[in-house]
Length: 174
Image 1 (tube, rainbow, N blue to C red):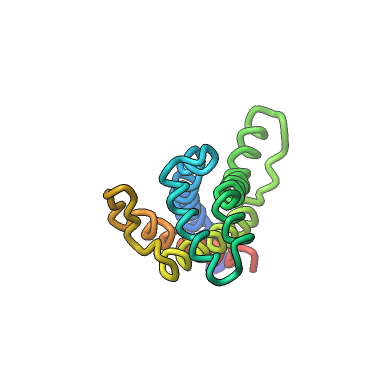
Image 2: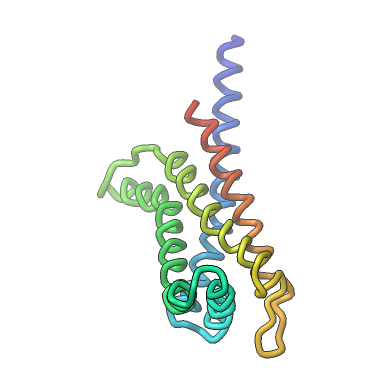
């Protein structure tokens, strides 16, 4: 009887972890995927953000790297965010494929979410650093309009939630 209760409790814990994990993945992918058009089209806001950071970098690592970051940084960061989103969403794709009979659901959601959580945290640690250490600041001001810290707070939330995602999914693999 005690073993059965322990098994039921573990199943419930796994379902709660999976639900929390998918909620975090939804937020991370929402932020990452909806920012891609800005990064990949070099929107004026993106040019301002990466240009400000690039100019700051010139004073520390030289104009070559600073200018390269200003011009190529949005594509690199956007590419990492896209790759992270794909990894985080891959369990859903595998499940859908198995559901329609085109694949096998291998039950690796925790592994993908763990990897994606670390990737999200790493890329957002860079964003948080640049907001705090450069003239960009917490509240991005471009053409007289402030974002009121929206970008910074989104980056902080993803940094923290990425660590949570890694942590809770690591518990399932023990």
